[in-house]
Length: 470
Image 1: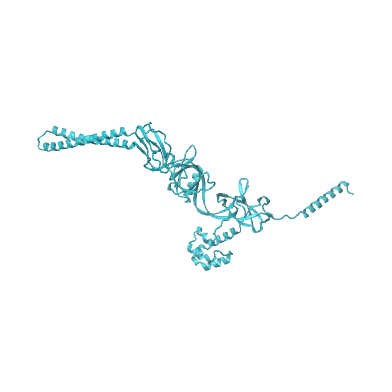
Image 2 (image 1 turned 120 degrees about the vertical axis):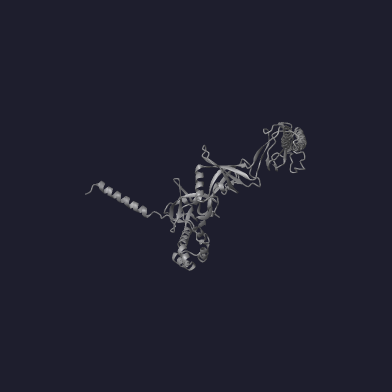
């Protein structure tokens, strides 16, 4: 007879086993997790790099006096406010647009008029002396040929004549300088732009090349200077070597700009027209410049702006909504629904954001557009061949019937050269049409979970962040 404790242990184990089996048999079968899925979107995109910069005027001048004298008049405060400047209501042109050549200041001209008159009189005096000595030189030449005067007398007369010509040139130079100083007494706008306030009031002494009267900046076009770091620069240069972008110095790289109040948009289009010749060793950056048209003058110098450099040629990419991406230890993955409505884990490499959607670089891409085989141009299939495929471009794909149709539409040479490309494109297109990713209910599922999406397969464009399902 067995000891009591052995009989007790055997019975206890039986109870545990029966209890476990009963628990497993009575466990309710879980329902399929309710989720929402959507097809990824395929769009033609262009890669970009986001940078910040500041606007700067193409032309900026500190307007200084060119001659020394007392400031007599200030045309920034015109007396006739309704005549020449009818738009003025406050009696000042400070902070307004001026045109090239507009008068801005007048320096006392009396001294310069006197110097100009003196210089002109000296020129007249020199001209008279040159005319008199020219006649003496002509007579002396004839007499010298007749041996009537000595060599010394002839040399003296010819020397006086040459000296008078040099004196005339000196007098003319002095007159031109006096005339130029006279012009400099009228300070005008060197180009069209926005003028600042006056820095010196009339009656004050202004010094040549020293006293700043005001400043002027141009508005159209507007420059934007920005710096790119060494990593970005090397990437841009690599794209340039691969032919994805033109050389920066070729002034062909497009750049978009957005202002602080324009959200995440980049509505202003420009081009890069300058790249510095070396990196700044202190910051490890290279200075570049973009140029933007500014006819409406909404850009002013000194603005902080956001820039987006468009890099590479337009190409098709697969995009998904940010809400479909799940973080996993610094990586990203998607829940993909297979043909059995089961969830599969798919690790992905993500790219840039376009229209609120994120580029996913290693999903099955669409090889065909809505017009089916048209996008095989990217595979360098000639248009003449693609046009022959129009009768089957929207047909459902099954490989053997598809091959037979190709044999009827293409000649032998075309079939031999392009058949595999066309077949690969059609197959990828069919696979891509079946691809679905979860965009909601992610917290309820894991790999292998059966899902119920109730037929709600939606366009990913309707799943962009901030949009609600209608």
